[in-house]
Length: 348
Length: 260
Ligand SMILES: Nc1ncnc2c1ncn2[C@@H]1O[C@H](COP(=O)(O)OP(=O)(O)O)[C@@H](O)[C@H]1O
Ligand SMILES: [Mg+2]
Image 1 (cartoon, each protein chain N blue to C red):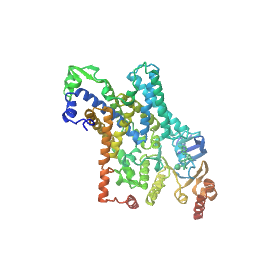
Image 2 (image 1 turned 45 degrees about the horizontal axis):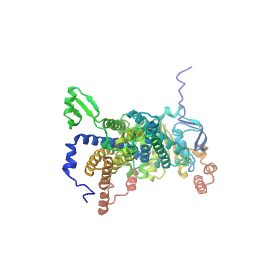
Image 3 (image 1 turned 135 degrees about the vertical axis):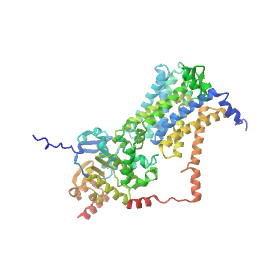
Image 4 (image 1 turned 60 degrees about the vertical axis):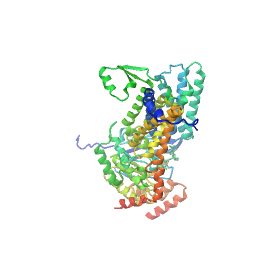
């Protein structure tokens, strides 16, 4: 037994990471949280628009974008990757749209065609050049949070700022003398997550109405097609920034799990969005400690923890949770038929 | 030249000229020429697949036109969006969507709000009044999946009222609703008409069609007939609208017989 599961030790697996190992713990947990928040918030809209598969498609076809960048021998810096991912994401969206519109192929099959062919193109392009360029297909597919480079971003601060930042929790990790020391990829992902949160907040109305009723959106002067493409563009950016930490495959789980869990617990969009962020935080923390305990892939553990939270929500959801259903069945509480009360209230 | 005599005449609320729409090269609407005057309550009648929904979507600028044009108050729809209200077919949205009845009605106000603006207290009051008119105010905080068909239709109607438009397009508002909702909708249609609004309502039930509407548009890819109900609701016209569909034809026969 002991060989299969390491003994769980509170001190070693829960306390130690936040004391002796604080530096890497903080960056990894933040990275996971940013990825899950950015993906989860956007994922909510994919779920609402029944486009969960499109998230899958874009996460795979982004590989084609990277492949083109590799073949053109471009520097694989952040800006290039973002542009390549954007182009690939837009291409996927367009191909799906064109196949769906001009042939009899249904949307789900069109998605299947678009992303598998772009993904294959990416695999070919990258294998072509892999001798000469440093790009790890394995890493693009599976990712690994533990490999996120730490601390090569330094920023000198004014004494006033140093004083203020010094009072923040865990400042020993990111404050070194009068310099702010950060993990650049985590900072970048933080900006992406913040941008997603801001956009969801600013365009709440537009996203809501164009997801619920695109025809009404048009009649209100909101271009639902534009909203669709903007959403896909944002999705491509989020997916490519989440790549190195969770990979193209697990990012799909990050897109769907937080929102799906939140949907089980509430029927109000603002609450669902808040619960999504909560799921992101809890899933990341649980996943991190799970990985510390089992000494396994952190990205994989994030997703397993997110799945555990989903199951918990399914069990405990107040309306259609398994426990609530079981309770109702035991008490045989029938709700009065809807139609009767409506007719009588409208009759007068 | 006396200035006070020349009252500016407002262009008609809705005008179609030689409108043709096709899906996958198969024409669904062909050569539609129509002018709907102000303050009319028009019923759009035709068999399934006749292009009724397509006509509404084309009028609202949701579709690519193969030829012709549509004008709303003399302008392309894009310039007069706020003057158009919409009640879609009930099945066209996902009723499990995580919003409340109030949220849906407030969507009708979005056209009056700027970017980043949240609905104000005034918008909420308007939404509440509209819900009151369709007797759905007690349900304002309900999640929309907990509504019956009739209640869903009233929420859509309240949302259209909240748009405060001058033309309303309604796609089968009477489909699958209870009798109380049906009469509530008819009352509201007549109230809107009395306020000078123009209404185009897709309707599928022939016997009630001649009761509810002042004029009828018989549609089957082309305009079969358009005019006052008493002139248009005739056996031969209905027959050519529903051409060849025996079950419906007997319904037509019955409906016409009832009238005479
Ligand atoms: N998005 C679409 N793509 C392809 N064909 C469509 C689409 N919408 C409607 N049609 C076809 O156009 C015809 C008219 O449809 P519609 O306007 O919905 O008819 P109605 O509302 O009168 O029942 C039907 O044959 C329908 O199958
Ligand atoms: Mg229709």
